[in-house]
Image 1 (tube, one colour):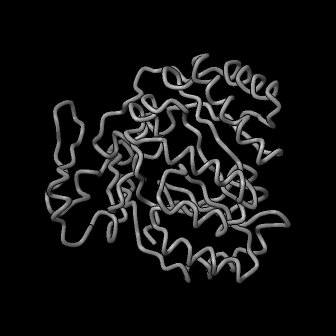
Image 2: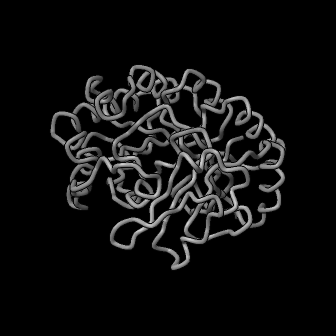
Length: 298
């Protein structure tokens, strides 16, 4: 499996204490993405020159150079030809982070077994991304191995891939995004169609063991009266098959902005104010008025 990183959360990525395995690679290009290092499936180098006064000595192959104003630049073409990744594999320099490494499904299961005592009565393992279902074969193998160990599993997904249906029965919990309902709006802001997303969410509502739906609330995208109304209407349809459906509203934030700079990328949401807590709370009240179990998360 192409793993980006692992971490821990409590109550956010599934019930209880969760060990979260973030997989690399995504088929969407959401403008507000807070994890740009998770989008490409290939390993990538993040460069944070302000973390060290000795950054100029970190690369023996000349990829780091001084720029005007005393800053440092990274020649990523030279990095692509690097024979040894000296900066991270040997120097372990704080200005560099290597994102992406292969981990076998059996190794994931072994590590999770070692963490069993930390999960408590309700916790388990959650796979996030990127889009984890793009690595369907290995992810299904990992889920099966964890089930044999008696460990609870969850998958966080955009619900947009062709093999999504295999995870409806393969995971104990699906945590799915509903970004918007309007097809043109979805394609404009994510670069992908949402026809399969909506069909997959309907399928999950009928057949998944457990289902949470998350709405990222993004100014200028899906926070207007028309689109919030569209999402409420869709969720009321889904609720017919899943009466206890949980809906989380997540406010867009800028916590991922430094990662764009570290990848040498432009940040698409520069200058856009995150939605206020009051705006998110008002949307949640509308969801509740429609009979949905909803709250803000973050």
